[in-house]
Length: 160
Image 1 (cartoon, one colour):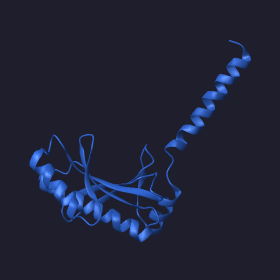
Image 2 (spheres, rainbow, N blue to C red):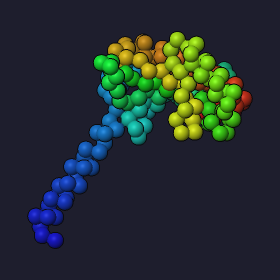
Image 3 (spheres, helix red, strand yellow):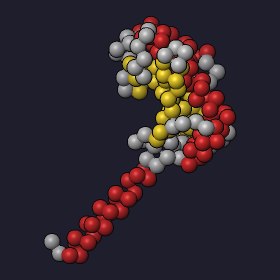
Image 4 (cartoon, helix red, strand yellow):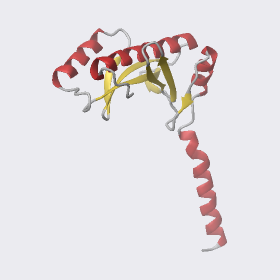
């Protein structure tokens, strides 16, 4: 292999490896808002902000994620806040229960139930113009709603 071909390959590999983390880079605006509220978080491999809620009184915890990216929909910049509540197969979510979840989604003023893979999530999709307090409030709603459903579906298990 010629030195010029080798140089092009090395340059290509370096640029790819330097750019790859940017695809999953955390969103500085979310970081700023969470930091302003003193919320402790980790950034996962997808660039989502992962927050663990501890309900020490009940001996439970609940994960909440704030998407590290936004989507543009009809001129709105939308951010997702989501919290896992159950495993579809393991917790027997089918037929009647799925219809109950759809009916509950209809009644909710903020958020709805969604399935991603084998996980039931409570998902809130809001314009990304939320201030820090509003973002934290949406996270609180997602955590509480998902944890309540997890208790209903799995009893004492605290898997998610």
